[in-house]
Length: 267
Length: 233
Image (tube, rainbow over all chains, first blue to last red; front, top):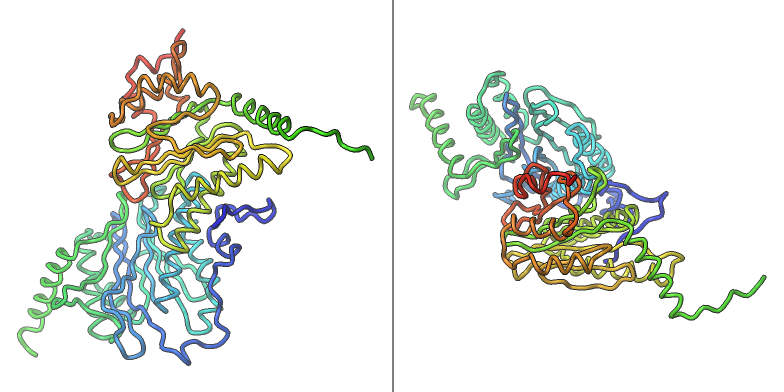
């Protein structure tokens, strides 16, 4: 690998995605529907919820290919940089590739320019990536992310939801994506209040993912047998922090106890 | 059309080298050295915005002296090289040695083939997982690549600064000792450097994934103490 050098008029500047394209490293877009001939692995439900101190982001761990469970421990929630995170649903391969590119895009910009992008700038970058992915989405490889971060300029958490065309919509209270989105967001909608603490928000998000897994076969629930729990992270002024599995296990045992009590012993 | 005068290759290289050296000597110098927890990079630089020291990758830093636009171009090329390599392979596969080789190739090419050599001297530093793995690659304007141990000096007056560094620097010393040695070496016996005129950064061995960190003025002041921050009158 040699040092990349460009003529001034062709210089990609701080844009890593443009650099990747210029170096011929971008993936080829399929010219016919991929999912018509192959089974594509899909990642499913992710949510993000705002609370006064920041944002809680979470995603279940299941990936499916048609009616099969292809992975039990896939991760769909990632740090994008120190103060932001990205969660993805859709075709797992291109989705994880998009996250890698997005993470590098932010880091590359920061290094080349000597200062990080604003949160708004990061959200717009992701929007462009989803937009550029549209030709592949048309062939059955759709990727729909959520972006959340702590805006250090405003001292508040912010959420962005996307559609498959790259449309970017800022949400005030919560955002969700993936096949279990409807059930998860209903639970959050019913339980959300503007005054929830970080702790209460985490429990609400875990309950939402539990209910989504109860209704949607493509969403994985807490697996107490194997010790597999959703990826849950808080994004606050001190940055992106993932919760420990032991903490999540305790919280889920509590939630399952609650569910049992609510049912009053009836099966 | 008149035939160009014959110039002996020795003479041509000599002229170019003199030209580059003069350009580099006009700027101010920088020092890098290892300490117990990492690598310190310290440059004399009155500007807060135009940096001489910067981050290339997780464990790799870059420093340049001489003509700003030329070493900044090299810095950006290095960031691109490292990020592309990490993207194509993995983060662990990005290393300072290969980057330093690329820089040496590029500077050597420019020196022999272009009208004007680059008036720069650069440093590629990589922090190891233990002190034995620390690397300092010093690359000259003509592509000469030197693998330095412990410390190195870039820029004009390198010899004088180097001899002071040799006296003061101790292997495996603390950050404060290393910084004191570097600042004293840069300043020399007749000058005192003001904190606002030095740029300090470290590669931190035990830090987060991205080991590069700039050291703020307050922290530099607290290490150097007030006697070094006064302007000599």
